[in-house]
Length: 550
Image (tube, rainbow, N blue to C red; front, side, top):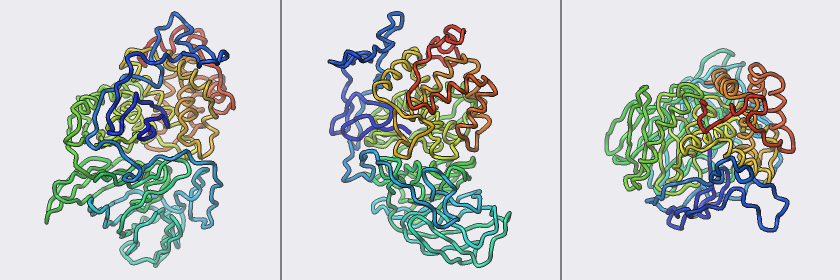
């Protein structure tokens, strides 16, 4: 996930745009940007950044500035009055609730009430009849699960909306609701190992949920006639009942009914489309395991553009019909980014990929599985590669506890930087040295020892997480480093991971000294010094150029 503050165009996570006006138009960047190494006026103690200090290095743009196309958004910019995601200041630390119901929660350190014990969901079938003009839905979610213990009741995570009926294996079941917890009591107990289904019928207007780790309401969003979902980490429960934690992945089917002429899209592959009585139903199937927060739907005025790559991968993008022609030009970067990342991590993990571009500014992008969402200004090579990289690191290989989020964002940030360096023919060492300088001035926390209000902190999670990987690469050399990335991904693809799993891979392939290095970057209160390539005796091997394969 990447993001920026709306309207003021200020950085809130990792990218900083040149500027935008109140109409959502990109302001051209000045011909010469302030150098990354320019020392603050009056601060004679500030260190000189590497790209300025070392005359043998070609100065590069500051790591947060890089060329972006001049675009105009057909929907302009968004005000908080007409947009649910009006960004607000980062949340302050708060006490986390303790589950009262033992069936509620799976023990996540940040979200103890999210997820539920006693069963494993295999599949979700979500049928949504949507009226876009009023933002109302009539829906049925049917989940198929296997009991992992004897159940006389079980819980689902569900926020708002009116539940009209619940059945378990076709028989009406009692249910109660308490906050975001929905407790279902089947007529007959479910024995451990038994497969069962639960169908929940509900309706109303979905409402986004406030999350203590994110400076914006999450889940179902309705803005300027467009419906979309952005749910990381807790927002999925705003539009369908679920076992809402990454440790319980499942396959999905979406059936979305909208008025004729309105486009509906979702995670997965479009498998059917029918029309009747002025309404169109599209069916989408996600046949690989997916965490609940990555399930997505989009409804609005969009045109579909698709192609197949030489390896058979389907690329389908959705853009507003009045979008700037530059949008499709920027999206044409995707095949190159796919090839670049496949060389590092292996084959793309799903059946399709694509980007849906909102007709207005968002200030962030989100890696919803197989169909990332971008604002109309967020289409530079770095952001495109960052969200694409998440399909491997974040979506296929997913953290088992939200306090491990550096394994998503630190990895995607570094992979995005590698692609950016390759695309602009920059030196990745220069980019990371400049970023290290910025972090030294700004200060960071240890990426693997964060609190919930730091969940998407740009300095700590994205940048210091990426610096951790770059330091490892500089220490062990390219061959071992990229073997570590590939081995860790192969070992955890389709499932979950955590820091100790990653460190085990580091230990097996690079030894205990490499583990100590990584631990210092992840857990030390003070950020370690920059690790220069060649310190391990392999001069220059850890990044001669921006090419990840050199």
